[in-house]
Length: 399
Image (cartoon, rainbow, N blue to C red; front, top):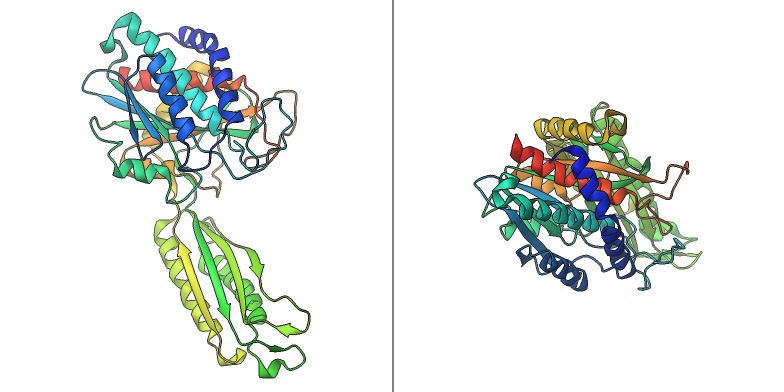
């Protein structure tokens, strides 16, 4: 299939994808409870006569083509616990739930790619695709442990095993119709940290008769920043952010407990382990110091996703074929971010590339970012994303 034929097929599916995307946008579902979304995807695949199976309860895996080779394409399907304030006429009908990260568009674009690929199979036979193309509609990207890890455990990368996997994510910072790539480290690991700092309550006017967890928490917050400024190589990326603090109810009472929460983001697995150990050891040592009168720290670490590492070979390949499809002027470099993405689990198992897809309307200088209640996207991105996915699969199998 020549590039202009692929673009033509994607454009022909534009209205279908727009309808799919808006239906999903009106009816968002949170991570791991995407039951209606899953049924919708299954129904569309059945319309296209594409065989599929359900995995991880709400995930769907479909197969197109035949042969000894296999390539996988992935889209995530879950929404976020956000009240929508976008003002679009197809806004969420579910209070407190919104597709504020573009997963509705991801799903619509993969279904669009499925339609393009199925049309090619019908016209040229199953062997015309050059192998099997596995379509992964994955639940739970927004919630640990991540739907990718569950689907991998249930065998999504087996029978057949893909040689490579490709995925994409919308990017409101870039203009619609552009794609951005980076080889190697792309996104960070995402660990959540929860502290309970225990002291002994007392009168604010007699702090010497209490053990003050507020002071301990304040010192812990500031001292832990030395982890980044003095323990991490200045040339290595890392972030430790304490994002919430709760404790006490009165102006004249030292409380018993202060609770903190935050996140550690790294792009080096070895340093990630060292940092988590250091945080735990210092939290314990600080709280129990006689300087404060002997307190106690409880730290709960919820491990998130590993760093997302793009395979350099597949990324060079994906970038080149995307330039062929979109034109070199529409393919850019992506600056790595300290975001998290459970696509990282796939690239731990097989080579793969995750790219970013611009969605900002060309006439706007700014649109609200990901996870924002006013998030919008230019729906002209839908045929672009569908064509990129189909092109990646067909080009890899033809190589």
